[in-house]
Length: 187
Image (cartoon, rainbow, N blue to C red; front, top):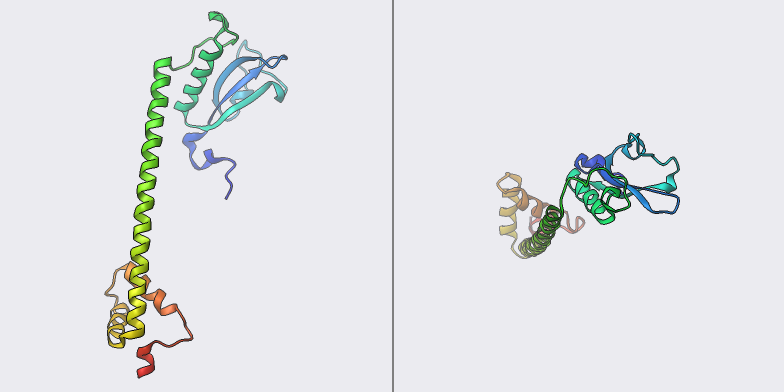
C-alpha cells in the first residue's frame, strides 16, 4: 500500500519546511508550516504567487523536527539582519547546540531501533523455527502414533489447548484433506 499522505494516519507528522526563492533561485525566506501555511499571507513578506518560487523541502515531520530544520536552514543561509540572505526576522526556535543535540538523540534512537529490530527479528526466526518443529512433531505423531493423535485430537476438540496449539492442530488437520489420518483408517 502506497501512502502519499502519511500525516493523515499520524497527525503528529503533518508539518513541513518550505523555502521562498527570488527570480535568481536564491532563497529569501525559510518557514515551517502545516496545511496551507506556505501560501498564506506573511505580513510584509512577499509570498510568491508562482509555484516555481516556493517549495516544500521536507514534509511529514513532527513539529519539533520541522522547527529544527527551519532553524538549521536559517542559521545556514543567515538573516539579512546578520549579513545573510534571508528576510526571516527570527533565527528559529533552536540554537546550534540544541540542533546538534537533537540530531545526536535521533542518531542514538535510530541505532537503538536498528538493534531492537534485529533482536526482534532473531526472536521471530527462533519462534518460527520452534513453531515448525512443533508442527513436524504433530505430523509425526499423526502418521505414526494413532492413539497419541486421538488424545491430541480429543484435547483439541475439548478446548484444552491454548490458541497456538489449536492453530497447530488445525494446520495438521487441514493438511492432505483427501488423505485420512492413520487413526481414521484403523477404525
